[in-house]
Image (cartoon, rainbow, N blue to C red; front, side):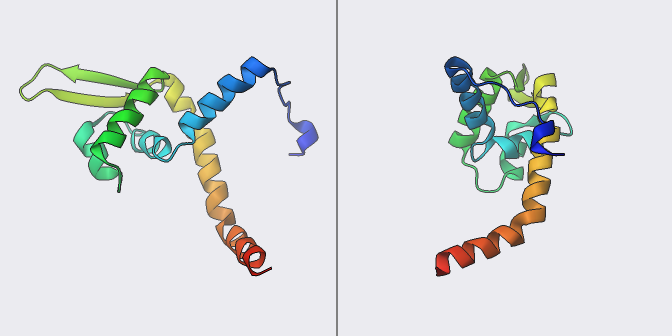
Length: 124
């Protein structure tokens, strides 16, 4: 696909701010890991924490709140003892899986080329 085949939006200042805000959310350090972990269905908080290597409880909580606020994740509280909380992707969150996986696939396919370019750049 050539760049001329892509219908790029015409940027308006307010739209740019909102798009940048959304991209900041989904492009932060932890959101993509959470979204990918939820791809197969609901997961409990502690299970999410176990599956995402290196995330702290506080950062998981903050990131889940942001994703919930943006309508990408739902939080379901079950009135059991102890309380059970499940997180799941919303329909909008599920639509994010394909572009995210395309980006991950691209990064995986190009990691060696990029590493070589970094080495060349740093050596010059």
